[in-house]
Length: 55
Image (cartoon, rainbow, N blue to C red; front, side, top):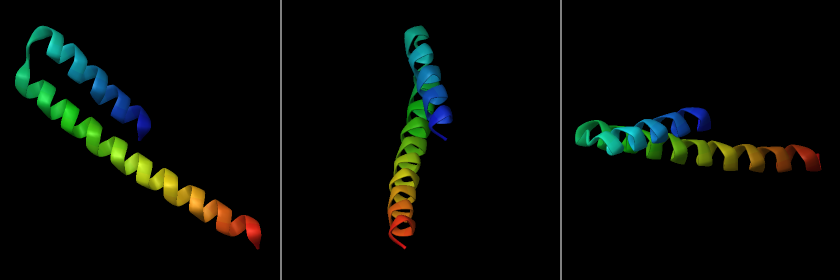
């Protein structure tokens, strides 16, 4: 998922260089959403791993 967030961020940067406003806004929005989802899943997996490690 982090891979896709980076891909959409790169698409947004390239689109911004060429002046495609709508594509840039959409790609940045998708990248932000994917990055937040990735962070939430990462934190949840860390907490689950800590819980399992104590048992």
